[in-house]
Amino acid sequence: MGADRSNLSRRALEAFALEEFKSGRIIKPALRRLLAFGTRYELDEFLKSHEAYEDCTMEDLERELEGLKRLGI
Image 1 (tube, rainbow, N blue to C red):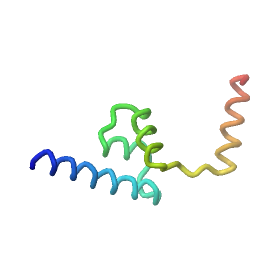
Image 2: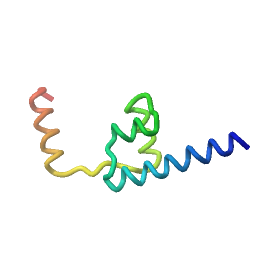
Image 3: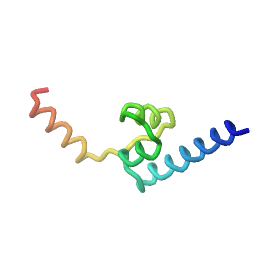
């Protein structure tokens, strides 16, 4: 019974955390700490598996492009 309760608690935490992320009330670093992921790659995989993606604006894309240009890519 303890393992079931622990699993349910984890799933509830993940569901809550996902909703907070999707609504913009929590950012990735805080989400990573809340869910105790060791790396951002673990968090990215978790978000991908739940089809939860960050919104990306045109300004974000332009900044990324400028950064790549500065790097010669």
